[in-house]
Image (tube, rainbow, N blue to C red; front, side, top):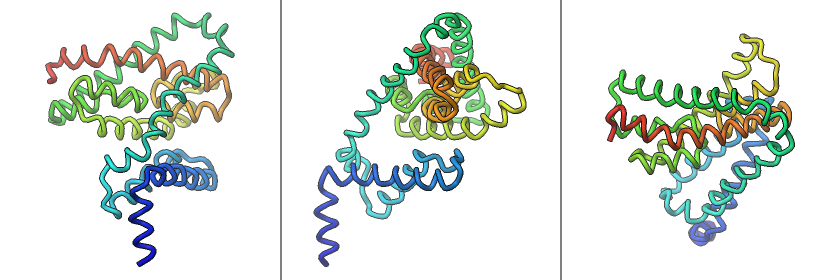
Length: 239
């Protein structure tokens, strides 16, 4: 009885869901390290599944959870801006390669959106689903904003964005081996472009140089996609 009373009381406190979120992430990080850092057990993915399970078992709706954990959501913005630090450290190299980086990022952003919409249409996906899928190759905070703007489902876009990031990290080592990509500049930029936040975190483990170019690609992809996705959705007649 006392345990039930404690749960009801603590569950109603905003602090509870912050503690749960941080605790789930720390536990997921430990599991990831013990598993050798595999992307299959990426801390963000595992922590997300833990929290979903807890919300389901406790019959807690998302609004209640978000009310308590929204401070962590607020920190997504500053965390993204903090990626400017490694960019500043490698600004001279970035300046020399700016034009090819812009071309690669623009073509990559276009390819990601157009192929997603075409494949979705091929399988008969509804307009709402296509609009939710379109921002999947953009980091979650930006994907949510784009999805809200074009009429998709923001929560679905966020989930697809996370899934894309995990898949990108899983496939990247194989792709780099097959294509014999050894440059940290190239591999980092590719990870940031294809796997956004997950890819940037993975690139940071390789080197600060790879992390800097991954962060640059993630930011540029977000900017390009914010402009391109609404235009492409109109071009394909999605509403």
